[in-house]
Amino acid sequence: MIDAVVKTLSQMFTPPFRHVLLKSIGLALVLLVVFAIGTYHGFTWLATSGAVWGESHASVLPHAFWTVLVWIFTFAAGIGIVTGAVFLMPAVTSFVGSFFVDETADAVERAYYPAEPAGRALSFLRALIEGVKIGLLAILVYLCALPFMLWAGLGVVMLFLANSYLLGRMYFELAAMRFRPPFEAKAMRRANGAYVFLAGMVIALFVSIPVLNLATPIFAMAFMVHIHKQLSGRRIELIEPAR
Image (cartoon, rainbow, N blue to C red; front, side, top):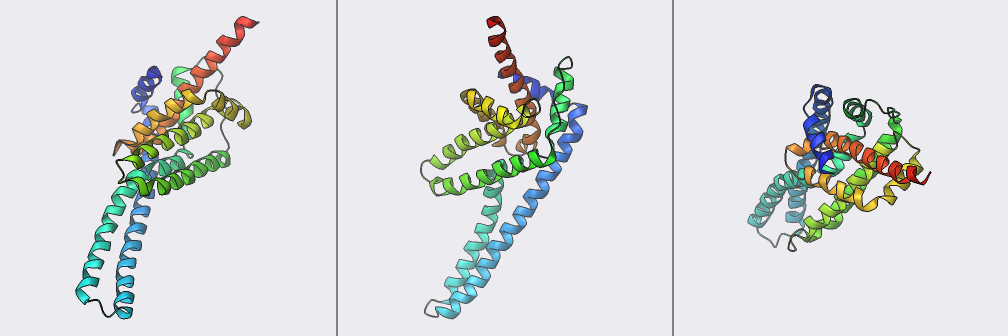
């Protein structure tokens, strides 16, 4: 697994990857900006409209109270943008990654496995469905872990473990489906569940690093191409002596 990490990192900024990397980062930034604008406007609308409604229906409370409440919600808007961008990055990268599956995998296979048969390009719809599905699951996990964030860091641990599973599952299956049918790719992932989960922990660690995590879709897909190749080779080694 360490060898796969080294190979992936050494290829990240090579010319074949550079173009894909820039496109991936650009799309991730666009999605984060849209999220930030939506979050900010949502909180500010709640602050102003809610305060006006509250002041008109609860005149017992002084005007200063509602002014402070508006300030708190405005401050929460800024905090929400930052924390949301950090904790929802797995969901963003899952969606973004679905657009660059084949470009990334092709570059890895040409560089490290030129003598082996090239993988078949996944249909855009298949990659998009997998990306959206895992992205929505990541958002659900974030919402479930949110109440535990202030409880001795339990929420952070829950998020890390869940992201390890979700990201490892998604990117391994996308790498495997270039060489085998979806049902076989999923069966292979289940048969190597512990190893794929450990590989997912590497991706979850990568996605937790600010700024660098914008490159997660490219890193994760390239990394899982190597992991799939390793597991496929191990499977062949186990089968061939029996023949």
